[in-house]
Figure 1 (cartoon, rainbow, N blue to C red):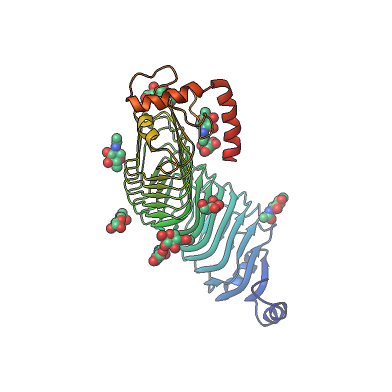
Figure 2 (spheres, helix red, strand yellow):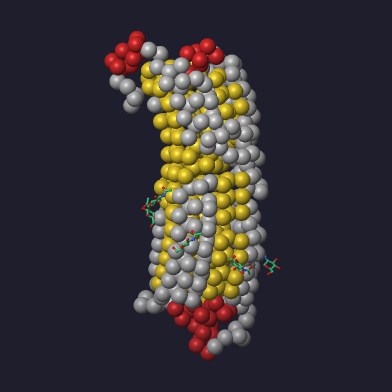
Length: 402
Ligand SMILES: *[C@@H]1O[C@H](CO)[C@@H](O)[C@H](O)[C@H]1NC(C)=O
Ligand SMILES: *[C@@H]1O[C@H](CO)[C@@H](O)[C@H](O)[C@H]1NC(C)=O
Ligand SMILES: *[C@@H]1O[C@H](CO)[C@@H](O)[C@H](O)[C@H]1NC(C)=O
Ligand SMILES: *[C@@H]1O[C@H](CO)[C@@H](O)[C@H](O)[C@H]1NC(C)=O
Ligand SMILES: *[C@@H]1O[C@H](CO)[C@@H](O)[C@H](O)[C@H]1NC(C)=O
Ligand SMILES: *[C@@H]1O[C@H](CO)[C@@H](O)[C@H](O)[C@H]1NC(C)=O
Ligand SMILES: *[C@@H]1O[C@H](CO)[C@@H](O)[C@H](O)[C@H]1NC(C)=O
Ligand SMILES: *[C@@H]1O[C@H](CO)[C@@H](O)[C@H](O)[C@H]1NC(C)=O
Ligand SMILES: *[C@@H]1O[C@H](CO)[C@@H](O)[C@H](O)[C@H]1NC(C)=O
C-alpha cells in the first residue's frame, strides 16, 4: 500500500509488466518475464502452488517492494544472479522443500524475515548482504550464514537454528536489538567491530567475542551459555541492566573498563564462577544482585548502588560481607536493602533474605571477623527467623522481580 496509489498501479500495469502493487508468479515463465525488468516497482510474490524452480536472473537488479515466498511447500529453488537490492522485505516462510537459495549479487535488503525452512542448509550469496534493517532467521537448518555479513542492522534475531555453529559479522552498530538463542550447541558468536548496541541478549552460545564493544545503551544479558570466559575489554557503560545467568561453565569474567550500569547487575547461577570482580565499576543505578557459588566479590571503585544489594553464595563469603556491610546506609554507598549470606544451601536473589542479613560464613559461625562487623552480624542473626524469612522472601521476590 505504501508503494503506489491505486490509479498509478493500474496505469503502470497497462504500460509494462514492471510495476504492480504485488505481482504473483506462478511458474518459470512468469519469473523470466519479471526478470526482464531492470527495476520492479512493487512487490513480487510466488504463488503457493508453484513447484517450478524460480529464477529471477536477467535485467532485474532492484525490487522496490518485497520478495515474498510464503507457504510454497513444493518449491525447491529460488534464485537470481542479477538482483542487487530489495527495498522492503525478503520474506521466506514455511518452505518445506526449499534447499537452494542463490542470490550472488544481493547486497542490500530492507529486512530479511525467514522462518520455518527445514531444508535450507546453505545460502549462496557470494557478494554478501551488508545492509539490512531487520534480520530475523528462525527455525531453519542453516549451518552457516556466510553470505550475510552485515555492517549495519537495526535488529538481528537468530533463534532456533539448530545446525548453526558460527555467527561472525562485521557489524559496527546495532541500533535496536541483537537476540541470539537456541541455535547450535557449539555456536560461536563473533562481532569483532561492534562498538555499540542498543540491547544484546545471547543464550546458549559456546563463545562470545566482543572485543570492541564500548557501550550498550539498553541491556546486555548472557544466559545459559557454555563459555568458560566472557571478556568485554572495552565496555565502559551499560545504559540498562547487565545479566549473567546460568552460564554453567563460566569461570572468568573480565570487564576491566566497565564503570557505569544504569540498571541492575544480576549475576546468578554461574556455578563455576568463583570470583566476581568489576575493577572500575563506580555506579549502579539499580540493584547489585549476585547469587551462586562464588567466594569472592570485588568492587573496589564502587561509590553508588541505588537499588538493593544482595550477595548469597554456597561458599563462605565473610570477607565480602564484612567489607560491604560498612558501605550501606542512606548517605552511604549502598542505598537499597542490604543482604549478604555465605554457606547458604539455596542462594537466592534480592528479597529472599531478611533485610540486614549479614553472615558471610553461614548462620552457625561467627568466628572470623572484626569486632565492628561481628556486632552488625550478630544483630542481624538475632532478628533472622529462617522459616518466616524464606516465605517473606519468596513473596518479596515475586513482587520485586515481576
Ligand atoms: C501458511 O499456511 C498456514 C496454514 O496452512 C497458515 O496458518 C499460515 O498463516 C500461512 N502462512 C503465511 C505466511 O501465509
Ligand atoms: C556507528 O555509530 C557511530 C555514531 O554513533 C557512527 O559514527 C558510525 O559510523 C556508525 N558505524 C557504522 C558502521 O554504522
Ligand atoms: C537455551 O537456554 C534456555 C535458558 O536460558 C533453555 O531453557 C533452553 O533449553 C536452551 N536451549 C538449548 C537449545 O539449549
Ligand atoms: C578499545 O578502546 C580504545 C580506546 O577507546 C581504542 O583505542 C581501541 O581501538 C579499542 N579496541 C578495540 C578492539 O576496538
Ligand atoms: C548508543 O550509545 C552510543 C554511544 O554512547 C551513541 O553514539 C548512540 O547514539 C546511542 N544509540 C542510541 C540508539 O541511543
Ligand atoms: C531494550 O532495552 C530497553 C532499555 O533497557 C528496554 O526498555 C527494551 O525493552 C529493550 N528491548 C528489547 C527488545 O529487549
Ligand atoms: C580471565 O581473562 C582475562 C582476560 O583474558 C585474563 O587476563 C585473566 O588472566 C583470566 N583469568 C583467569 C583466572 O583465567
Ligand atoms: C537459579 O537456580 C535456582 C535453583 O535451581 C532457581 O530456582 C533460580 O530460578 C535460578 N535463577 C535464575 C535467575 O535463573
Ligand atoms: C560450588 O563449587 C564447589 C567448588 O568450588 C563445588 O564443589 C560445588 O559442587 C559447587 N556447588 C554447586 C551448587 O555447583
